[in-house]
Length: 147
Image (cartoon, rainbow, N blue to C red; front, side, top):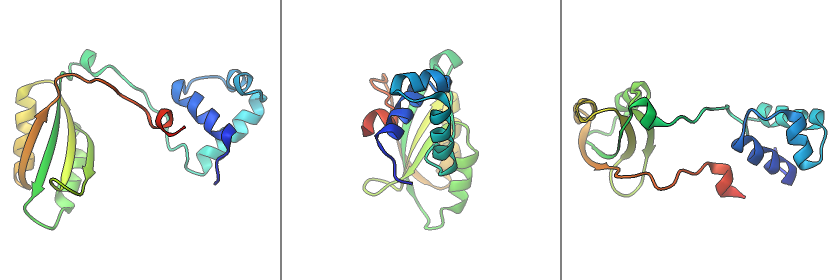
């Protein structure tokens, strides 16, 4: 599906408020609510819109520690490690990377003890380096960066 300027406007407005009424969204881009709804349906059906999500304040949930972990795998079979990452609620992002290490993992936990338990789990797969976040400076969503 090729996206046009209207599609990008819809995506930007939905990324700012995914609960916006189609009628209200349409007023902002000079379309009817029904036309906007049809566009959104096409974006969903084509997989451009994969899901709607909720952004919460992790500090208010008690997730006060953010760590970035670089893991250096000791084996070429990564299947068990990938399964572990998919099952670990502490790992909020996992990227296979080129450059330093094999994977970069973003972890959110509520205590140093919970971080240590997570590190114990991954130690079986290889060595790691840990970088603790001091303060989040910026959090940007993809659509704000693309257009």
